[in-house]
Amino acid sequence: MHQLIDIPCGGLHVCPSASAFTITAQCGTVWVTRAGDPRDHVVKTGQKVHLIGQGRVVIQALGGYARIAYTFANMPP
Image (cartoon, rainbow, N blue to C red; front, side):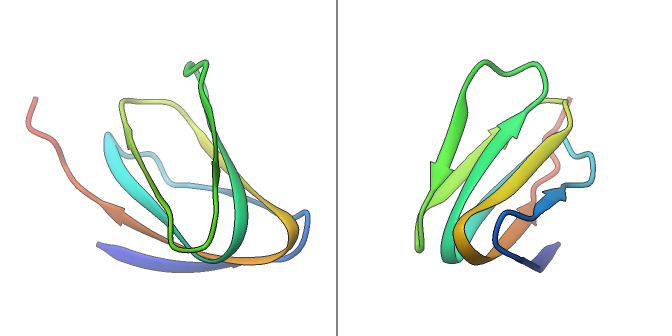
């Protein structure tokens, strides 16, 4: 499943729970954090981050409007 999300400057988006997915910044820069993961990610236009595991994912637009795409990939147990 592929979904596009527009996030206003400073706005937040909470991703639905999934075991694995990819976030792509199509426009702008976003900060990505996942509960239980000590690593945060700054993703700029054209860059991707692959996330695996459980935990709420929060994405914030940095410095202006951002558009992200996320693609879910169900991983076998």
